[in-house]
Length: 177
Image 1 (cartoon, rainbow, N blue to C red):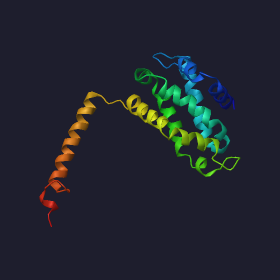
Image 2: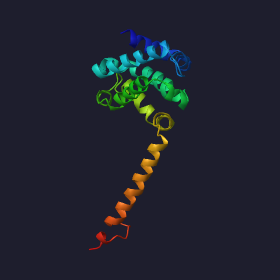
Image 3: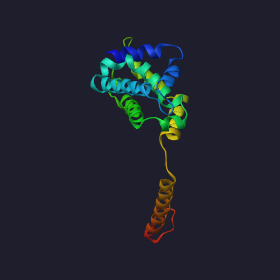
Image 4: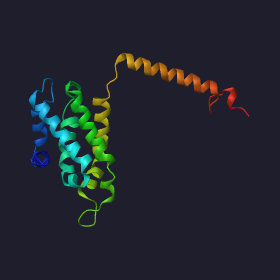
């Protein structure tokens, strides 16, 4: 209950996302602020998973708070310096919100889209979606030089395999009748 009120109040304040990012320990050594933010995200995730209908009014402010604090307002180094538990919880929250079927089926009070469906629709349309995808790829997907070399080797081996099997356009023998 406390977490829901805190999320709603914090997200409703102008500039709250930026201030909460600094307090939440976006940089190295966030300490107690980072752990409190992790707990808040964990409470929101648990509430979303256990009672999506009850969490529906809180989803729009929670999305704004967590997306800005986790992805958009911080640079890649701060994201990588954050604890893995924080990163995982925030990505799980986003995935659970996007995958929740209750938000798609339920109409709002006025017959239109529910607040959660409207918030998710706004997130997935145009510039917000592009910013989210860019942040996820640039900040969360970290590939070491060794992993990059392995991926390139796999891609080269895969291309050779496709060429030898006679896939369309490869000129291989297996593609002939």
